[in-house]
Image 1: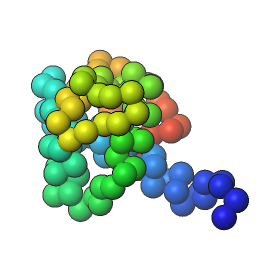
Image 2: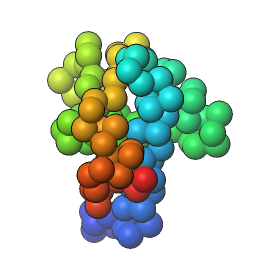
Image 3: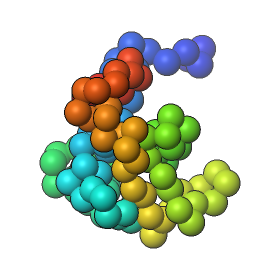
Image 4: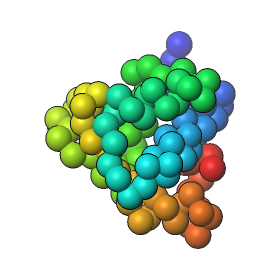
Length: 102
């Protein structure tokens, strides 16, 4: 493996980002913990793994979500995540992002 991300992995990443945002929209404007997000994704048939932390960091970097109590590199199940107004705009299609499959 040469370290490049395959087109299939890119599609999976985009889909998971969109699913996380849609899950958070169910709770908006209330913050929920990471464990609740993982459980909600599992009930929708979406397998979660170590990718979850990467997806949450990406969405936070884009300012679609806010994470509180997060460590510098670790996101734990008890950390709170909330959807931001910018995240709502993305879900509603007011803004577009090629990195998130809505």
